Length: 337
Image 1 (cartoon, rainbow, N blue to C red):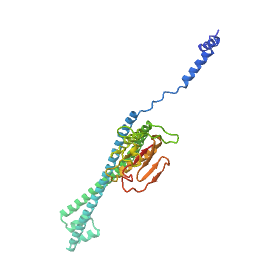
Image 2: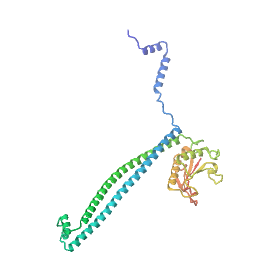
Image 3: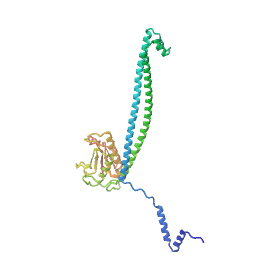
Image 4: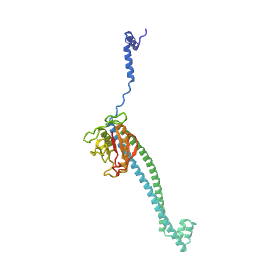
């Protein structure tokens, strides 16, 4: 008689004892176990992302150093090739001058009665025989030979330098191009990590259904709102802002500064027009603020005599207020709800 398998025996036992519920429970448990997804990686922390960012920044800095080192090496190779060309040109002038002097001597010998010089000028006889017939002194012949040898040496050195410089410049151009691509790739990865860090933060406060935020009261020794403090910190961490950040002002000028809801991210001191690099930093800060306006409750941005408002999502030119600072050329102004 065939022996029932354990599975069949179990099923039979469950049916016999009216234990369908037990079997159902087992099947549900199996299905649940099978349906559980693999354990997902935990959400990265700000600390971990900042460590990753520091490593990427170090790699980017090294690539930039290599990039500029390659450019300098290429410039040196080009300079060496130019020097070789100049040396050859100078040697050619010396050679031509001495050749002219020797020809003049040949003419003088000929006018003095030596018929061999005419043959030298006309090229009808072998040079060695003609030199003998003109009775030129041995030191002149040696001098001519030395000049010829020197000219050949300079010419060959120039050719070698030119070939080497061309090969070096070609290799350096390839290396520089490769380093440039790697640098761009590293910088894009850095931006992605920075974006991840931004996404780990949540703006404090309550957001309305229309996307605007319920205003907050300022707090703390800096007299700014928690929302403005978060925006300030994120910008400071990401863009450095070496000339300082000004936020709370007690003067009631109708703006958000006395309410603790605005900060100025300075790009220069004393009202001076910022450098090109600092103006570009200001552009990046303004671009970041616009990109993250909804996430962090940014109401408007003012920069370079223009204002961007979250309601419209576009830039609008402002009237001239009469100065670099008043027209916001030396700082982006950011206000939050």
